[in-house]
Image (cartoon, rainbow, N blue to C red; front, side, top):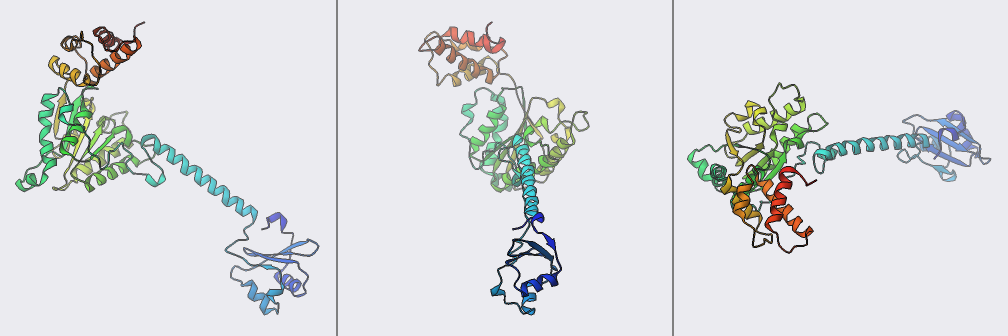
Amino acid sequence: MYSVWQMGTEISMGEAVKMIQDKKVAKVVEQGNMILIEQSDKTRLYAQVGAKTDFPKLLQDAGVNIAEVNYRPNNSNLGLSLLDFAGLLLTGVLAYGVWSFVRAIQRQNATGGGLSSFGKSGAAVIIGKRPDVTFNDVAGAVEAKGEIKELVDFLKNPKQFFEMGARIPRGVLLIGEPGTGKTLLARAVAGEAKVPFFHTSGPEFEEMLVGAGAARVRDLFKRAKSISPSIVFIDEIDAVARRRGMDYKSSHSEQTLNQILVEMDGFEKRDAVIVIAATNRPDVLDPAILRPGRFDRTVRLSLPDVTERLDILRVHAKNKKMGPDVDMQKIAQFTVGFSGADLENVLNESAILAVRNKRKEIMQEDIHEATLKVSMGPRR
């Protein structure tokens, strides 16, 4: 293969053919639209050939026996010059760089997002799996569990509701402070109904690429419908469902919100898909999501009272070695304002303190110190 600077002096096609006829060449190479000639003294020449010219036939017509010529034919542009090849290589490298950059962008908000998965829901979905969490694992939240249990009946046997002409809420909005068990309750619904659970969050729909969030919404709902009955759970929905027109709301979020509403409005009567969303900022939500057929049912999860705190502590204490002096009732009374997540953290910190103090069991003083640490921070 010859580069531009190796081809030597240009001659006419007639001169090239004449030199070949006179056997004054050592090598003839057809390279793209050029004929490259190398003489026995290493002198190099080249001639332009028409795009549609059949060079071997041209030589035959001139009475040249191709078999007697050291001739390398044009093999699918095998003769691309090194300069051309370098250009193609550079283009390929740049294309790969762009592809890698876009892939990295998409992976920031989704698992597995390359160009091939643009618009694919990279949400932390549990596809085809059924959570092993049930209502028995959700301590407290008695009222919330009571309000949401009818969804389980619908998901278990949607046919009987369809035949009766009943309209089951398509969307349920869970409202509560962080740590009150919104995600756990949503998983428990799927676990009780034994249906696939698609878990994502509002921020995961957001992309640096315009339209990617809306495309991910379409893909997520398409997959949920394909294996219905199923549950789509959107945590932190306020990230994409803020009231339209707010100063800090991006157009990307509006596109994503619009697509969520379109998908929910587009549910067919027999699409057994329920959308559960969670937020701790109901005040910023767009009113459009609360219309009938969308998130027309809200379930509020408040901080647990003393009885619920006791139930939560007992659930999280099951796998821990408690000393004889531990009084769960006193702990429940002492932890006013603690969420379920806070209480779990208290017992976990207690276990860490017990190990640090080289004890074989968790003592009441460990729990007391852990409670202070969770509520006010580490001791200084």
